[in-house]
Amino acid sequence: MPGSPLASTPPPPYTAVIFTSVRTRDEAGYEETSARMEELAAQQPGYLGIEHARSDLSITVSYWATPDAARAWKAVAEHLLAQRTGRERWYAAYRVRIATVERDYGFEAG
Image 1 (cartoon, rainbow, N blue to C red):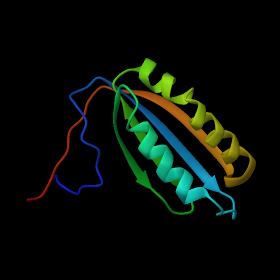
Image 2: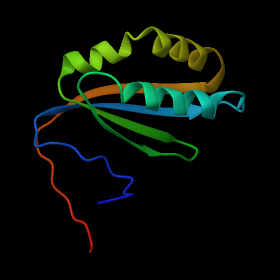
Image 3: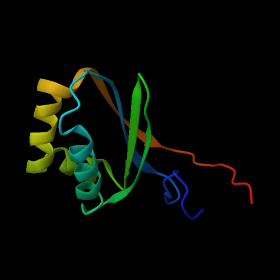
Image 4: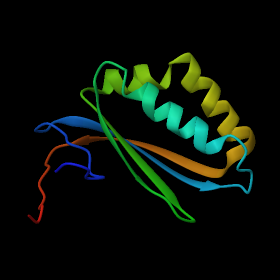
């Protein structure tokens, strides 16, 4: 679906990294860093896509071809720096969950 906020993923199985967070009031540099991380993630081997839902509780789900691809993304130097800054400034709390997608189905009007 062109322009859809839904990630286009292949048939399962694949890996989902679910990042749920509560932000602090510190906004400085957050949006720029978030955009950069999305751009950088898209350049990594095994990247499949990303989806966001943001309000008081934010959820970002990134999709990866394999658990190893997701693990490699976690270790990218620029991503490590962003993670540290997030803990120090931008997040009051967060949780990361890693899951294997076993089924994937949906609907698109049109």
